[in-house]
Length: 114
Image (cartoon, rainbow, N blue to C red; front, top):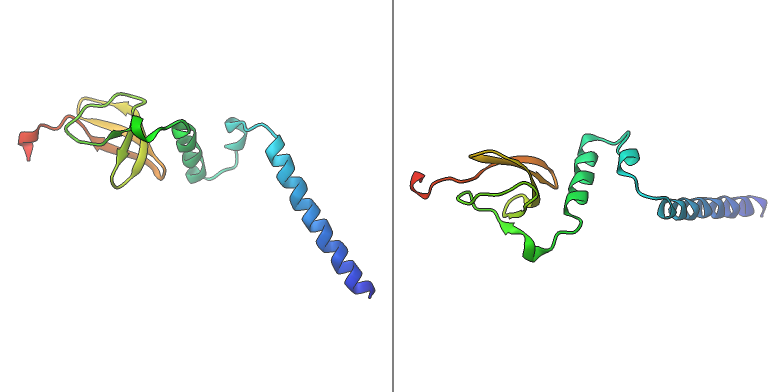
């Protein structure tokens, strides 16, 4: 009987611990500078992507087309990579932050080059 009681108390303490941790996590402000410390590079990239696309609206994104030109901070939709945000551009390429990481994409390609 005493062993059963000890198991129940231990289980109740674990549940209380999880609940307390969840409540504390929700109540603490999210500061990306503090949360990025100790994370893997993939987690940092994912955090950056979430921050960059948090206010993205599907109707405001541009469908990627290598013949078009893009500007920094444009939101684009790529058929293979998904939603991304343009980080930097040059005359013939751009760097885009996607969910999985950065990709270098061609832009401004003449249609006759095919």
